[in-house]
Image (cartoon, rainbow, N blue to C red):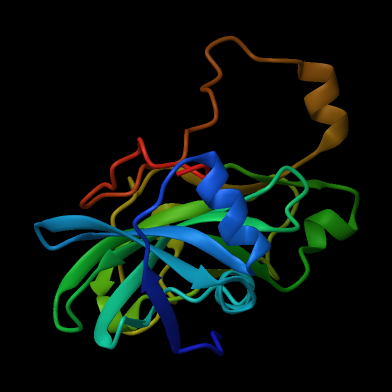
Length: 216
């Protein structure tokens, strides 16, 4: 679970690549705060705090922006090419008592007998669209694969062991995992009429001004 519950921010008024480089040289990273029908607000975060927030998969936390405390959802973290440094963070204002939509990563628990027998665990969806109270947003959704044999499939509707108050909104008949027999896949090739792997659902809710990227 997340270990960071609060992060401090400072309002910023200078933009562009030069200003962003200067921020990073000072040990800070640019960020944007939006949501609740308020104007987007540019700010900066301490780089080490932002990295701790990102690496512990913090979802909802308190933002102290120039002394004003507010609840925010970590919507997007942009890393550099080598995933070493954060170049930009998107934060969305939330109310602790409101239900929000967001995408949450899927992780596995257990070892599949089918994989142990030589099968390949094929993951179709890496995240799920969920709805819950802002303060109950999970870091991830766990899918138990300890009973999966060769050829078994896990659909979204079969994921029932969910954190309290969380509802999955992703289409229930989509495949999340399946254990493939590599020999049969190689022999069969691509069967006629095979469905393409479903794309990941987009985040539902208020969107940030995408024009503000890592160089803003």
